[in-house]
Image (cartoon, rainbow, N blue to C red):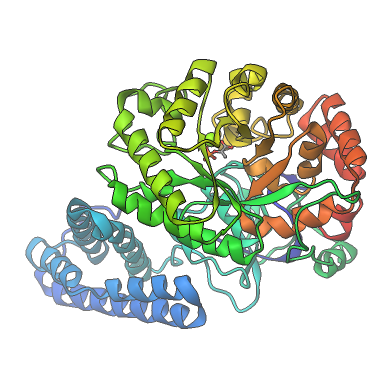
Length: 554
Ligand code: PEP
Ligand code: MG
């Protein structure tokens, strides 16, 4: 049995398909004799056509965005500029075919990056086809997500964003990685697609292609030699409900709003379709990523209005820009901070760039006027009462009176009793709260065992934050990844959390589990978890008391 950090629940048994190793830069020393250069150029052409056909075939098997991405990448494989440049490297410098393709593709990628905007994004596609052509030329497995006739369990060190864009949940039925952390890109994507996933699995690199394994995403366990009974049990698990059954509530009717985390208008539409009661976290920085300059007020109004329109008369919490650390933006963040996670990030970027916050508040106010959503505004990474006061006052200047704060720093959890005297609500960002409570970088796979919101110390901080807010009758929600864990969600409710915001895909399972427990039972679970001395103890004690987790394979 291998263990890791279960980041997306569900049980599956199937054969392993390993992600091929990355393509290394081909050596540069060999020079081709004149007589062999024409055939090298022909080989490049043939390999490119093969890659193009392969991607087109994959595109015709896929649907939606994935089909488009694959079709566009396919045309890049035989791009005339790329072919010409590679042929020139072979004919004029005598480079071997893989080396010529490597250099030609890199030059093209650099040119695209320099052009900026949408074209810059194509640079990744060029590098992707470069690797595929070189794999064909050198006879090694093609990089990227493997293609198999049967559904399989994908095993990798970690997945690149480009790989995950084309993941097909009917082919990839579970994911196991040796790298990655609970809030890494892979984890967030797996949860949003509903694919059971375990990251930071010690020993995953020893799993071999074709090996039968059984994966329990909820428990974070990989059975490497499952017996027939385990395989049958895992293949026959009754899936958890996949649609929401009305507003969130416990068995005895205590309301717990089930909200969605969204990053753009498309995400908001999807969340509304899934039946989310509103938006608990709109990460506005996703509208800013990849830009050299701040968007105009008009551009922001357009984006925010579309998000708000998806939720008429519903609560939508718009978080102001959270740039810095893992989300640097050139127009507000310095690139020379020795320790960016502890640097000028979140609300702090407004100290040097007040105009960016002002433009956001103006755009939010105008979008709110134009729609009838119940707009709330929230600042990320708030630490002190003074920051809270300043933010609430800035919101008020734009007529925005529902101004809240994120509790992501232990200081703000401990002093919620003061901060919530100013702000009208709070939302706990468990991803950062865990990072700062445990002093463990949330991006680092080697610290994944520390980076768990099940840490009793993190649960204590959430409890203290809820008690502090309660003094002012202010609600506290959770919008970090913890809210999407169907075993942890009832614990959070028991700690006093009023709403849970998560990737829309996780809403049905969390809602269904909550309905099996009374509020008092949630409180007992919270007490059990806080009494535990470790993550494992807390999780095991709570899971043992929620039988539906086993039934539904969560
Ligand atoms: C968090 O820190 O938990 C959070 C929700 O914010 P983000 O993940 O965007 O930092
Ligand atoms: Mg955060």
